[in-house]
Image (tube, rainbow, N blue to C red; front, side):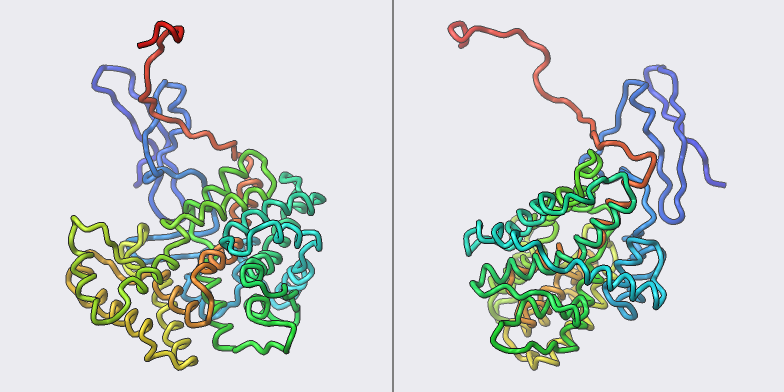
Length: 431
């Protein structure tokens, strides 16, 4: 039988503190430390490595076993059998939709794909060479000035309308960020396409001719979206929850999530992987860089290998690996020098004892970066597409938090290490 409480004892003879132990459906038990403050003591956990910041029924990860579940469904099954909007419905509503529910959900999303016309002025306020993520942060944040009719975060109907708007408009915002950067006209959404096809149309089409989506590439892009839709309490999701905990509107909360995702240690990993491949340059230089990666005194790191959460194979990587080979075959790029270099690195990581023993397997970012480059998506858009995909998880987590009667404004504690109290000294008496 599992223990139901934990006791903290002190070596100075202070009264022991009893704390309840909470058990979830899956995963580790947690010690409920909410009452510790009443005893004049807090916990210290930089990076929240051993702290559960919330309870959630959306996503479960077992990093040791390489398991990722959304509402109980393995990511492998969802990526193989669902489209992105089905997975989004699952994250938001807790269940996969039936045929009628899917039609209704798709129709509601399609009803919100257009952007308010004045938002084009926000885009034009940026330099043409601005990073797409900078543009997305600004445009998404500004949406609160245009869609303020549904921002009561305590109203379930308002929360759902805002969720639909964000899910529907994010592809348009991401694609237009690219078009603006490129200097091409904005392409308006076409609801005859599915979610992935519509984004590719807005990315790659021009007014000069009709756009016909390549079904293999569209399916590959769909998988990229599904595999990045949610990943438990990562930095950007925690940011969305923390900002939202103050009652901030959903557009401000998601804009903050995009800003967090932009960091190279988080959403920038696939962009960093391609930058690394470009730095290596040629298969003939692999040994040189592998040697550097093994040298602890060298700051060089192989990007796209290993994962902070997964101590085994990233379950998303196996799916993306298969997709990667399908896309390269479809585009006839198996002999492209950059892709040959990537595949040679993959082979080393899967066979070299140094990498195998440390479980530094190629992760989802390694393969998704290669796939997006093959599809003609520039490096600068990789993180923007990550943000587009993760919007589904962000709004599901944000909505769940606001419907939780136990949720409170986030207020982490600290271990203060500054000066103790001291008295003011006039400037003419200071040393």
